[in-house]
Length: 329
Image 1 (cartoon, one colour):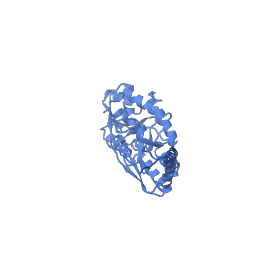
Image 2 (image 1 turned 60 degrees about the horizontal axis):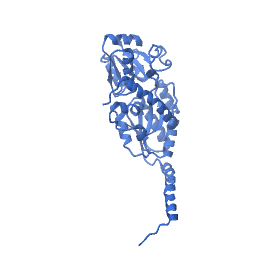
Image 3 (image 1 turned 90 degrees about the vertical axis):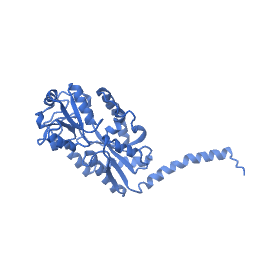
Image 4 (image 1 turned 120 degrees about the vertical axis):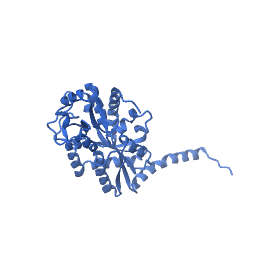
């Protein structure tokens, strides 16, 4: 049997092949979600990112009518969680709650990075976590940045921080570079894990969130500097790095948490997810969480504004990594 395909038939068939997918995407988005959604969090339970993720999960559950749960997969400064989400189907049912550094610094930390953020992830929303805070242990006697640097020049100082390539790690390395002192970064999976070692004198300081600092202040040590353009309302007695003479631009860059998904999620689902996350950040529960963590700049970005900021700030972080001299593993 011979099948004759005329030019007119071929054009009609080709046109149909192009048109059909345009109907498929809205259909998929309209059906989504039909099952539970998983948010993989690369940080420890009780961390800022974890609490944000759980607040957002509850809001998504309320709005979408499906179970939304958070699964903590820590290790390698969030890289393990990122790799798992990269490998997940791009259907909107697996998301990643991450700090910024796993999406920026992996290319400087590893000779053969396990993912490329631009090629492997869809950026959904940026959620600010407020400035980082430097707290010194009681044994140092430091009440400000200058006194801690003086201590570090005489003693082999150590500062607790998150994993290699994290924003706190970058800032510890920058402190050592700017002041020409030896400071040993001691990496932990979470901020709160540093407190027992600070209390026992095993480390001399911690670089973490306000949530960590409020636990330390007046009990195990003293907050001596904040990375912000102005003092925090809940720590009015603590000077910024800039006020205390540390004028490196590194101490002005802002850390953040974010939600991303595997590359290839349908555009309507991306739009819906991004919009819902921004809505979630404006709820009373999330506002109360911002207040608890002393996040004063509460500007949550949707996917397009997040992409713009990511494109603008990422080169700055990469230049800093080069200046500090990070060696890929």
